[in-house]
Length: 404
Length: 198
Image (cartoon, rainbow over all chains, first blue to last red; front, side, top):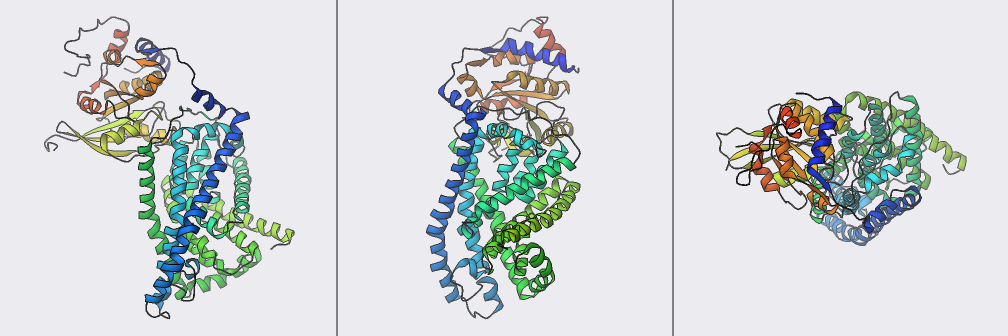
């Protein structure tokens, strides 16, 4: 027997009336405070404060405390000199691949699999993602995310999305891979396409943020500004160009809960485990591949080939080709590699932005392919246009300001 | 140990978003499905194994959906899972504070003629909000096993696992007749909820 929607609701009503009883419920202090986080007048300052707290904890824990305070000392004064002293034959190819530059005095510059590879993945990125995921879990489990979604709804409507797109965006700041799958909660193909494209181009992942914090701590704000600017600009354009609907947000706002410790620990463990199992080998493999390509002369040849484009159009040194190749495997590695290329502050800034917006890392690429090859191809087409146009635009602004 | 002669039974966990399906799923199977406090955490299905009373079950955690007419890609996954497993037992999970919305999708599933069992989850939140749900009466009306659970603390999980084998095909005609009082309530014997599983 199949009911119509109306008669189904009628049956629902009658069953509910018979089985559910409501007592008198007194509003608690928690409810009142909870309401303050959704009303625009109080909610927006709360949101700004929450995100600011998020960012400061991230910087002070990952950047200052663990990486600078402990990991840099461990890797630069103990691990690197020890490896340099015990690995045989500094002139050999295997020394170059695994230990790197025999004269380097820090693990960024050495660029061997066992020096920079381990330092970047364990010393810099691991603490960054640990603290990032801890805070993200609090956001997820407390019930704040759907409230944030309601708050940012009107802004996101201008770029063809609605408030709930904040969920893939925040997940994307951790890792773009689960974020791409999370776009499934958006209703239309247009929304999903815009979100996936913007994710792949403009949202840097936690690993990348961790390395940026270490390599360009002074410029990270400016880089962010550029990414947010691009996100809004190209979101606006995509919204105008792509046909399709962008329906209103319909979201169930759940009650606030204290995160359950057991669940927080479990999530942290699972995310860290998958980082160690999937990301670390990729970083190590990335260093290996780049070093082998250097030895084979491939990177030098590519650098010469792309020199006109890089130098004239983007205003960055031709050596950036190496990091761009590494960037296809892992963006964190690419930024680490940038840090050892001699260049001006402006060039550094421009190349970090370029690495961020250029091709998504291979893991993101694969997951986007799974969500639909047509969308992936279209997203890549948008990406090429964006990299070319936005990269040129930043260079032009740099020239006008006299810094490029 | 599971009896190798018994066939593995598939159980689909279906219900509205953010009612605790993944938390229940983790409790029953010991798996690691991602659990958060926002609707739409699960966007793909995960499966795990439960062995109860010499019977092996394959439990599948399905993305939450408000109805069987999908609104987005995650809900499409849920609807496809139901369509692809016509012989599965459907475990419909309710949020005890939002029974009516759970009932809507429950009726939709029941109309498909599938074996059903209901878990009324988040009983702790309902208690805090002074909402009481008469699960015994709900069982009588629906004619399928109804179990009260709190996934976060693990309450009711064992009973839920035991009741899977008693899952019933609900008869919409009878549900309406019972609501109209046309079928008198059976006198319950020895704590029987009248699910008809015996």
